[in-house]
Image (tube, rainbow, N blue to C red; front, top):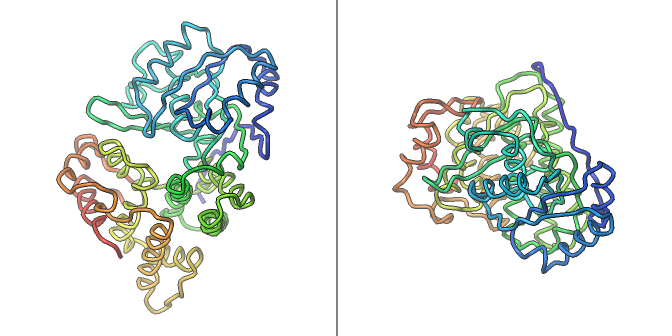
Length: 393
């Protein structure tokens, strides 16, 4: 186990009906004027918007609205949010939605105090030093952005999707009511399940030895997500399964399952080019990319892949040839994604094969850097992974 710092300052309000308390929560923090940030009219159709507004009004919290967040949140809306917050002297950004809304809110918060273009953060030209606080009412269990130090934004010009990690962007608080996820379309629910799993999988495959405790934490989370995912796809109103997924979403990306180990996140970076260029759902893209990445790198440490196969997917252990167990685990993982209704090949995702080199070039910043830690990958490696993502295993 390597040295680490664990920082998880987000206060969580978990359970049924907690969104009705949002006004009093904000008032207790001493804020009086907020930006209410959300995506589509879905929160109005569900009644959540009215519940939030009534609670804010009851607590005398003044608010300005900014809607329009889309999947793979756009830089232009972030810039508009920064302008509004400055003009209106906003004190807190309240994100009502999923990972895209939260990431947009985080970027607005960081850009508020920065004199230059907020995109500087995503090109590593600057690092955020101060932010408006961000609060969350979560509506989908997926990205884990409600407790993470990450945010990802897409720049429309050139369709460039970039992310940063910085502890300053961790939300101040998060309201987690699993009931708010009941009416999600099955495809969105499935995308979320994949995303939750991948945030722990990307931490699980490490070169650090003797991390049995975090191995077991990660494996327990992954097994719980797989079981809860199966239940939710059968019955979307299964509260306990929804609760498991929502809490796992937070724990999977608040660095708990990565403590004491070096994470990889190559699959995420490779997928960002798919969703940036083709606007596919992030979870769906990950369902395509991870099995291909695994197939490309598993021989670097077949024993760890075999452990993953046996402990998480209950594959039989082949002690004389762990490579067979490792391969079985990759197949089982891909089959699980497929059973959720996820695409698992480029063709199923609707991505053609004529832009692999361009995506790999963007992913490596013009082939000037490598990605991943489990196995470092260059532009040519990434092209080969895109090719492997054309098939089932």
